[in-house]
Image (spheres, rainbow, N blue to C red):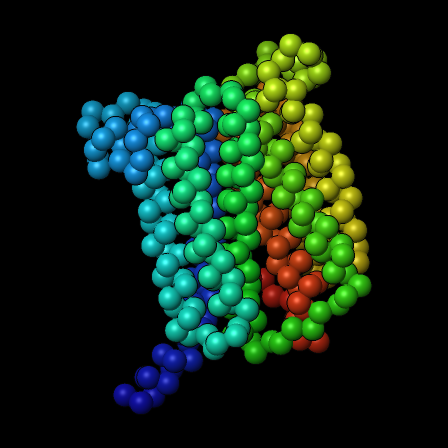
Amino acid sequence: MATGAAVSVRRTPVALARYAWGVVGYNILVVLWGAVVRATGSGAGCGDNWPLCNGDFFPHHPRLATVIEFAHRSTTVVATALVIGLVVWTFYAVKRGDRARRAAVASILFLVLEALLGAVLVLGGYVKNNISNARVVMQSIHFTNTMLLLGSLALTAWWLGDSRRGISGRSDRRVAGPAWLAVIATLVMGATGSLAALADTLFPSPSVWSGMMSDFAAGSPLLVRMRWMHPATVLVGACCVLWLVVRVRSRLGRLVGWLLALQFLLGVMDVLLLAPTWMQVLHLLGADLYWVALVCLAAEALWGRQAGARMEDPLRL
């Protein structure tokens, strides 16, 4: 009996780290389903009710838009339970003062804010065909918070892996500037990308050329005229990220570089294919994976890892 207890205690941190990465993966799926809600115009599928759906806990005789929206809300409920479980388990298994604890707390705070922002979007009517300036602002804030939530969850999982291996941090001040710059630039890229995707959904273009012309037409809606900001911020942001990758020179840095290149390719395909829903979701998946890797790389640059510690695949724990 004593031996079994010892084995259980020894394996718990490994299971916790794997669970944390599982929570990251599930939340990425929730984000992707949110993109399906936006791309299909299903944001008003439950009417202007929140958290109820058309006044009911469970929709009766739902339309397709209602099914899509209700499914998204249901997945967020599961995500909330998973994140709460991660926070509780982390506080139980990890010593006080560990970075993983602080990241877990940040995750739950961003999760609560995510729910509140979602409620504002629904109750304020900033869904479906709403093209107001207020929706532009709310869309940017909502997607930025989504990225911060994923980033916090990724840091929790990353630092839980460090705690399991007994790795203590050693920062490198020479890469602190590039690290912060890369993170901030990526947040801006994400916000402008969410607006570009919304514009593609609400104002689909018959051709690539006509879409480019409408981006600079004085009579185009604000969302369309802001679409050029995404490729512009991508070019600037990519330079910031590549600066960090070159300065760090690690396996994780190379992964970030390859994921950034993949994102660029997916973005070009999205434009050429006139942004079909499946392509938008694929592009967002690439963005989420790139963001998670970048956050871990920035954490390594800002707070470090023990000298000589081998960089491991976060899923191989």
